[in-house]
Image (tube, rainbow, N blue to C red; front, side, top):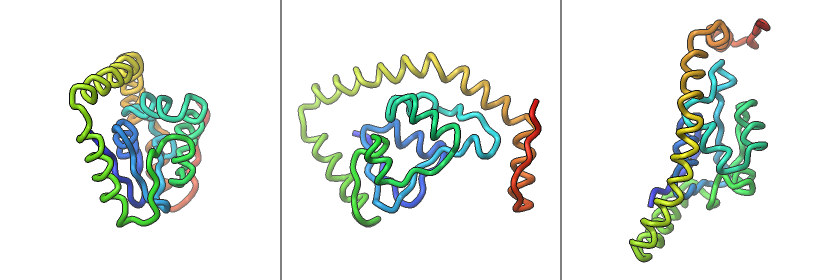
Length: 163
């Protein structure tokens, strides 16, 4: 089993990788986000695949289009986090315990189930990832990312021009 352990703030690709795991264990004060949009990038590294599978298309759109952080209790309620623990030091033991529980079950059943579930993700990935990666690569060459970086460095709000 592949269990993600989230402490603090999981951001961008880190959150995408966590959501692609078999389960996500997070501490109550953790946050998850994908702020690609906020820095002028298309969320093309897999977020457009795994977020809709985890939380549904409408919530995926809401959070990928705003880049806002989701507190772990809310992420747990919406399905982005599977297991919520109280303290940061509880995350790894809870993740290990869950992994041990899964590992103790019949291997053929676990492997077959994971293979079937992974097929869904493979199909969605083939449908979405080539386009989203192309669009993310393009967004790295635009005036928007330059403005986002300059605004961040100058500690001012970015000003984007409509095109």
